[in-house]
Length: 173
Image (cartoon, rainbow, N blue to C red; front, side):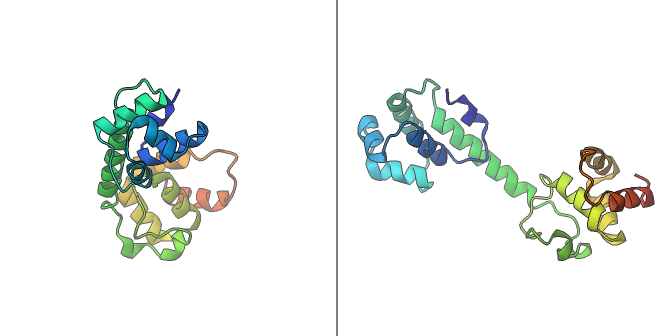
């Protein structure tokens, strides 16, 4: 019933516990009593101030009728791995001195995950970027990835289509 949450790596286990409690109309106090966990510890788990242990996970699983062994512990581990990977990816950036902040006016380019945002970045560069910015994006992602991202833009997305096509032609993509 709750297996879908196991694949939601970007969501913390505490947030999922809170969501499940709301869906079951259970208070933190009620789940604390039925799982024999201190109420403050339940609150700390939900707020992310404390990590799930296999024991805490098991108690909550039993109290909530969740049959997946280590359910919350697995979610937490997946989330920790997601955060670590995101942290590592954020270290990989193009040469930011070649990109104007106005190109990404709606994003803090210092905190951006350039790996996960590839399609957005490539499309934005080809719609609004100048020669130096587009060249840097092509250098950073590579011609194959740029071509793939541009080809993935839906045909129905006609916003700035002329600019995209002009730049594709100019850079032979």
